[in-house]
Picture 1 (tube, rainbow, N blue to C red):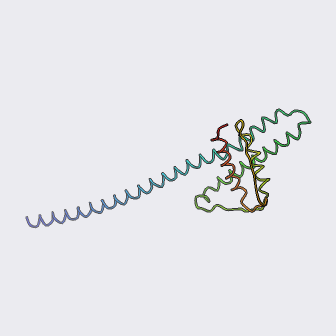
Picture 2 (picture 1 turned 90 degrees about the horizontal axis):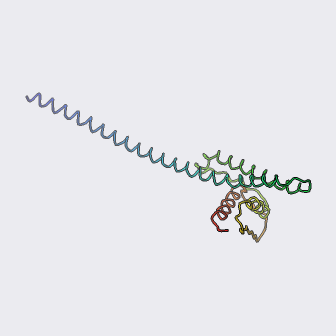
Length: 180
């Protein structure tokens, strides 16, 4: 009986140890699953923000292209050629903007890693802002205007792509959320 009890106690201790090890493994697995779930939620949030940003960034150039094409159709005489040329230039500029946006989205990994490359260049800020506001004028509601007043040297040294995204984002939101 003593031998049987001793064997039984050894078996109980072995099983208890096995259960404790299994419990530890389950806890570790639970922690891993919790971390994986949190990472998955972060990825989903990032995807949602990406889609929101992408739709916002694409809307302005696409609206410019659409309105310029509609206006091009109205100019049929040779006297209207300067107006056609103006709208063709706007379409080209908007297509270039879309290409730039696509290239930036394709390098989303760099953004996630915090490795956004700043490509500073020298340019005329007045000309730059005027070109952007001309593109955005097609989005204006009745009685809305974009007023630009610059004081200081017009020549600046910045990343024009990043600055353009900031200005387009601010102005398109102002247009969208301001009354007529």
